[in-house]
Amino acid sequence: MFIDTHAHLNFKAYNKNLEEVIDKAKKAGIEKIIIPGAKIDSSRKAVEISQKYTDCFATIGIHPHHVDEFTNLGERNVEEELNLLIKKEKTVAIGEIGLDYHEYKDYPPVSEENKKNQKQLLLFQIELAQKSDLPIIFHCRDAQDDQLELIQSCIQATQKDIRAVFHCFGGEKKHLKKVISLGFFVGFDGNITYPENIHLRNLISYAPLDRILLETDSPYLTPMPFRGKRNDPSLIAYVASCIANLHHKSIEEIAKTTLQNAIKLFLL
Ligand SMILES: [Zn+2]
Ligand SMILES: [Zn+2]
Image (cartoon, rainbow, N blue to C red):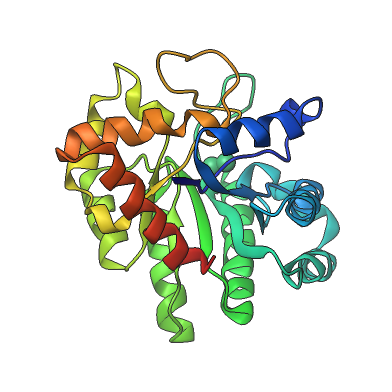
């Protein structure tokens, strides 16, 4: 039995056969699926799916890619919208939220102004999580130092703990150490199976098993040997099996521990 703690079944890649995908996951032993929002409408969609399917749960928030939604609508309107979704019974976390300084193809480099807005959005959403006593799914790409510094100063300023996962972990060993020392979990996805990602597999060996969460980040990051096709939660065993090999454990043991970890973080 597995829990996929990160699958975007709310994205349009699943518009045509959501039911089938959820069914297939169930048959593959996926007990629960957490569906993260990336902006207001995909957060709303995540909530809708969670209301329809017993084994699906939602998280809500604005991803750094969509920081313009925050600057355009303004903090008050965004807060109002997100608060409506926070109250829903199967909303289990705020996310995915964070900083993303990666230079994407076809996109201009991230400007200083954009970074400033991303930080403001992140801070606002961390406070929202603290107020509503929900854990956080952190996204972070090429911004580990800034993000960890911001999180730490937030904990110091509010004197309130944060429960969280750094999903799709991609930092360096020093960042992993910091994330673990803050009491956070780390999520790993199908990209750990890609031949070139030796650095990620090295990191996994250092990550304590009681802090690892399994995720697929569907529809992205499809594990080998299906790389290039649309991902879905039923493929999570390929992620688990890679971790099992690196930690010299059975896949059953990885499934059991990561399931307990997810239950503990998201209070499922
Ligand atoms: Zn992400
Ligand atoms: Zn994601």
